[in-house]
Length: 582
Image (spheres, rainbow, N blue to C red):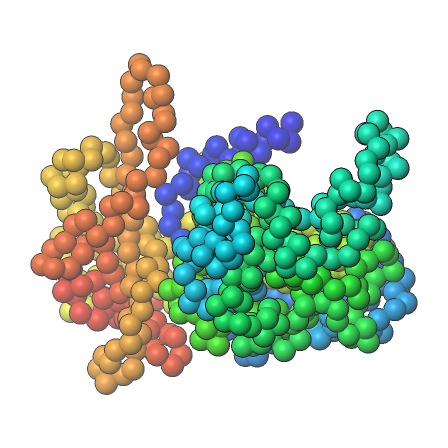
């Protein structure tokens, strides 16, 4: 029944929201000062305290799970200090640190892959070159895997179609159990010569490469996403062949001084009272899942992505490109990037007040995630570009706490951040803007979805109605459709510095979206299919008037304070319109 409800919600969401662009609103500027947001965080802290104290059901063994949680904001004063933190040292912990804080060390598992990809991107290496151009040993026609067709980009983005592991996927220490279940008895020579836990030592580079030549592909390159730890070891082999640097040396330019290949420092470590891998060396597998790090270091790293900090060694454009999806999964809500695990949950799962019929009260939010696991440890990072927020969750102990804690934090933070963004928009953007007395005026409103241009008048002429008429004799000629009365505004993420009336300002571009419907009534099959395909994104900038796009408006903000001072509608040559007094 629950699954049926989810599918029904997903369909309603697609109808109501498929054509909204991102972001819906500008990033909230003052979350630390937002009373509603801070109240939400206080409530979250109380809930976590109650769960750990046993006052409410936690869902995990609180005696054996320690954790460090940090919420990041793109404009936090100190990149190493999250705007909200929560730490817990489990009562069962005996070894390691006696006090958990943002400088405590954890194994972060496959979150290491994000850091490895950052190293690749900032290196300038040709990501579209085949791996064989860097590792000639793989250029072998006897291999079942077509290594010549595998690029560094496909390795970094989980599209290489190569094995998940080499050696590590063998459960040799459970041989007796396999045999009890009817599996044949195997000699030790049937197993890889290295990397098999309980049988032999870790692999040398030569053993690793030789073994991969005899391994089976899981898919043809770039067919579908296939999770691989091996891919990241190969990517670093390639980069090392060009730079003559080890993985540790390649890590050093990043602004993370407590992040390095395991093992870590026992006195600073959160060592759980369950079987774990603390103290182990991951060797050449470290790029795919063997780093030690801290909440403080990860805060610095992911803050640099959110804030586009040049210290990361990547341009703003490179970061935006890095965050884009590269492949689909079996779910309409999940996508794969490099190496992001991108999640776009149905709005009703995020926003309690979401109305699937009207589309108000919430919207689809894109979460750029990466999960990680090591024996006895699990980790999760999530970036929400729309709000400029990041989440880092580090756990040590029982493996089932991570999803519960991550969902709890996101379930509180995302609606609270959205509310804070709306509060700021209502204060700054909403109102009647006028020029030349009231001869030219624009009415900007906010509703349960976002900002909208509710009215635009010049010398008594209804400009929005005029645009609808112009649509009918221009765009409608080659794209037959009905234009709705709603002119919804979206931030264009285009800003420029300027001087207006002797004042340093920022010109912030917004675009309204042509909200259209298709008449698909027909007795033929598939009547509703085309009507659910979003084509609005193809129509931006289609209509100009005297070299100015008619879908563009500009909010003018003070460069120092961020306060919205004026509204300009360039295609009407309005000049700077001031907000009318209420």
